[in-house]
Structure formats: C-alpha cells, structure tokens
Length: 257
Length: 360
Image (cartoon, rainbow over all chains, first blue to last red; front, top):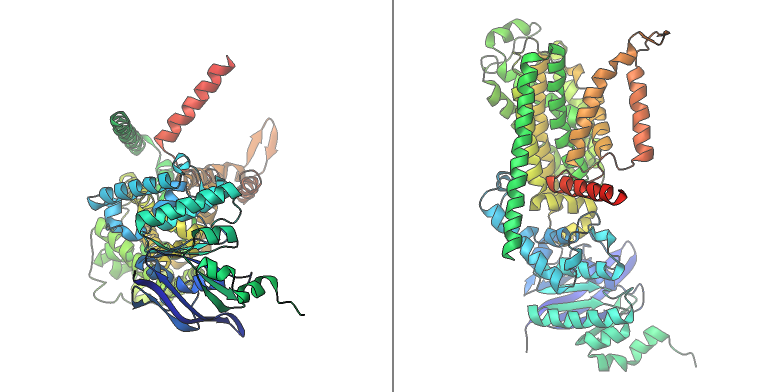
C-alpha cells in the first residue's frame, strides 16, 4: 500500500455568504490518478484553487506529504511539489513555447541575479540544465517542433499539452489537471489519456484531475471523488461510482414519482 | 549533433565579434564627436545617452515586468541630489548654502564622481525597495499611484529640507564631470546589465508575471520578489542617470524634476514598444535627438519665398501627431516586443536576398 501524498480534511471555501465548497475530505496516494467530478459549479475548481493556495480556505486543513500546507502562498505550495494546469488555459502567451516551460524551472535555479548579470559560473550551467530539461519535456509532450513559436500561436489541444509540460517542469509529486481534455477531439483525448498514464508511470506522479468527459475519467482514474453543490457525495473506484444512486441523481436529477 | 554544436559555437563567436565591432564603431564615433563636434551637439549626445539609460531601465519595470509605474522623475531627482551633494567641494557648499548652512558631515564630504554615481544608484535603489515592500504586497495599479505621489513629495521635500538640498535655490556650480565617455560608458554598462538580466531566468520570471501573475505564482514564482527586483534594479540605474544629468547641466533645483520627465519617458517606451529594450533605445535616440532638431519649426523660416514666423510649442504639436500616428498604425510601438539580435538581422537579410533572387 502506497503512502498518502495529499489529504484534505473538512476543506471549505466560502465567498461572503456563498459556500463554494464544504467539508471536502480527499485522499490522494502516491502514483494514483484521482478524478474529481461533479456538475458545473459543484466546487471542483475551487478545491484545486484552495489546494494550490490561489484561494485561502475558510476552514479545514490540507496536508501534503504529512506536512500542513493550509493557507500557504501559491509559490510556496508549488515549490513543495504541487503543480497545476488551468481550466481556462493560462499560458504566458507572448513567450515562446520553450520559455513557458523554462519559467516553471525558476525555483530550481541556484544563481543570484548578480551572477545572471555577470554571466558567471552557475548561471551557464543552470541555464543549460533548464533548457535541456525543457526540451526533454517538450519531446515527451510532442511539442518540440513548436519550441520557438509563441505560446498563443499553438492550436488549442497543443496549448493544453503545453500547460502540462510547464507544470511538469516544476518536478511535482502531485499534478492537478483542470479539465485537461476539454476541447480536444476523441482521438486527441485517447492519446492524451495514454500519454498521461505513461508520464505517471515514468515520473511516479500522483494526478488529480477534473473532467467532464466521463469516458476519459473512467478510463484513466483509479479513484473518483464526486462533488455536488460544494459537498462531496461519493468516493470510490470507477465501477462503484458508475452504479452509485447519489451520483446518478446528481447528474440526472431525481425522478419525482 | 557534433556539426550543430560546432556551428552554434561559430555563431556565438560571430555574434560576439559583431557586437565588439559595433561597440568599437560607437567608441570611434564618440572619440570623433568629442574632438570635432560643437558643444551643442556633444550636449545632445550626452542627453541621448542619459535618456537611453532611463528608457531602458524604465522599460524593465513597465514593459518587461508589466507593472505600470510613474517614478522616473522622482528617482532622477534622488539620484541627481545624492550625487551632487557628494561631489560638491566644501568651499562650493559654503558659498551656495546661503539660506541655511549645510548640515555637518555633508558639508565636509567631497567624493570622486564614480563613487558619487554609485551612491546615487544605491540610495535610489534603497528608496525603491522601501516603496516596493508595501506596494507589491497587494495586486493592482497601486505602484502607479504611489510612484506618482512620491514624485510630488520628493519635490516638496527638496524644497523644504534646506540644510541638505539648499531648498528652492537648488545646487549650483556642480563640477561638469559628465562627458561623452561617462555618459556612454554608463549607458553601455546599463544595457549590458539589463539585457543579461532579461535573458536570465529572472527575466523570464518577470515576463511570466506580466503575462499572467496567477499562472506565474502557480509555477513557484514569488511575484512579490520578482517585482521588487525589477523595480529596485531599474531604480539603481535611474539614480545613476540622475547623477549623470546633474553633472551635465551642473545646476539642479526641485522644479527641474517635474512629471513632464516621466511623461516623456513614457512616450519613449510606448513608441519604442513596451517590453522591448531595443525599442526603448531606438525611441530614446529618435525622440531626444528629434526633440532638439525640431526646434527649427519654432524659429522663423523662409521656405520657397513663403515666410513662416515660427510658433513656440510647435514641437509639441508635431510630437503629438507622431504619437497619434504610432497609436493608429503601430499600436505596439516601433519594435513591439521584438529584440534586436544579429541572428534576426542575418535571417532578415537572407529573406530579402531570396525575395530579390526570386523576382529576377
């Protein structure tokens, strides 16, 4: 049995009087792919935002590798090993594809800005390392031929892949994907699923993903957490979730017979 | 693989040689200008160098890091006063401070020009750091408001701490240390430092913060630190530019450092292309040089028998038209966010050659 990487306890986020997420308990183990599903507005993205520090949780706690990270600022959580992608793609549009990936390696550099200006010692070594790592990630994601193009010139599906490459450049232990295959055609979706499984094995990565494409979720996820109206309603393997009456009710509504 | 790395090394060598050649040509030109140009033209060349320093460092925070700020006049003032206070001789200080004597120990200190320039940069950078800490804790356009306010406050302060700044009388009779070698030397040094910083991981992080702060933070970039670095770094060079300016015009007073300075620099970096260091340099040259040579339109002229009286302020009308044209036809400025590189130059030349070849 692998160890628990991320655990949230009673995680809640409220905006004024509105409860966006309440009492989420989530457990992600090393090397596991966990799906987070639920109707629109259920609080899935809010869960990601609060885990990554983009939004401060109103109550509850988050533990990563046994250490409490609740309320820590986003950069610090990213450095601790949680990387993410965004639902509405947020690339650095005006930077090239490879620069986008290299940005995420910033926290790994060992040179100071004075060394950068002088162009000395560690500067060259680090830059070469970051560049090579970025090239390797772009090769994995099949984007190496577009390395020198601007990020916003890429087609939609490639932009999603670039977001994943950028997140991987952080060398995370946990990768949060917010609707990774939204807007991809069925073939691209299948290819992305295979790629994801391969990356997870290669890097021994834990993945949590939000997705509306149920076929994709059922295919790649080991465990699924269902949320509705901000509250978690079900937790289990794809088979268990498929037949859970609460899940069917949340998605299809309850018949008033 | 061997081949590509060898040719890559050759390209690097070629680019370095070309850069050295370009710098050599510039130095040769400066040497010629120093010996043959009129006082007026040498003064313009000095001013151009100072404006390049200002534009390039202003662009670092405004264009590259994307944090709208309005500080150059304030930092120029801080740098100018700091360096002036340290270079004036005790004798000169005794004579100029007629309202109230200068406070000890400032009244006795007299340092060399390079040391005072360095101090000007450091003091200004320190001011920037103090401003950055509260301002960058929050997101939004607070930097613009705070820096605009600081620019006004600094003039009031300079007017009122008479034992240090000599109040509204200003500081006169500064040694005219700034010559072509100092101004262009510092200018080249600034360009070198800024370009190196922008091409490092710090520069990429600055651009990432400009493009999408939330995404930058999610990738482990501490936006607060990166913005503070960019702001302090540019403040240092703006302070040094202030020192150069003070020792070029040899007389400074609080009224010199009005918001107009900042406004002109804003025009320069927008015309050049926000975010492009190359654009900042080109626009600084065109606008500073053009601003002087356009004085012609304010003087009486006779063109083809038609007599023109000369209208004061006509220069500004032409500038405004120029700005409108830029905004209409080159929304992103002359360079957009592109940068000059030998590589791009050769590629462009090759493309043109091919096009000519095809048309024949």
